[in-house]
Image (cartoon, rainbow, N blue to C red):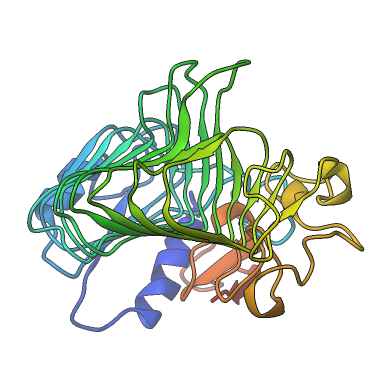
Length: 338
């Protein structure tokens, strides 16, 4: 017997942590791994509501349209840059994800999304993903959708005319503990977050490179750190935010910090560089004395987007082959994250 992929072990361990009534469907498109499904769409179509699609590391699994409630889970991203992530440091890449009616309460986590997400259903959680693409919008929340949660993601739109998150009319969303960046040129008006006048949005503990435009929407904006860009149209107030050029003003606990090198580590991994440095003015500057930025608050950003609630194998050593009589020697280290 030959062990071809350490994720076989991970799935076996994950099943122990999953509810017994839910199935775990493995997705792997690398020849010889023996996975039942090689595309996300095929696994989705075979799954029942409440099942988990466990996606192995691979360059891309194509696009996905979701019309049932699922947990869609990859291994994380930037895995070779941070310690104790996964033994296999490759991410699971996917294309366009569209969440339609029937997908309510779906969770998307641990993926490298190489295009965009469209949300057409309520109660969706988009958590701990890398969304890096060149597109008009990275996430679009369409009209009359409620309780969309976008948290602990790393979002970067590389398109010169691209935006980050678009919240359409009569929708409601919570955006917390993300890094959100858009490609910016001098004088550009493209938005990291745009919310229409009849939407409602809570934005807290993010690091944002780009503009915020609310079109007189109802919004709560707290504990964020804004680097460049403008802020406009909020029907409410900004509280305990930090910006580089006075975009939030100086009332209600807001601060201007022109030199962001005093705020962030700016060293280490791609996502780890946004941790606060010693004596950062963002430490304790948030509402109630919490830290501003993506690593502050009740649900801080998790390095590499490692999925929570199941064990992750960050060290694996094996002889690679075993026999029926002698078995197979395996040495592994795993941990469970929140």
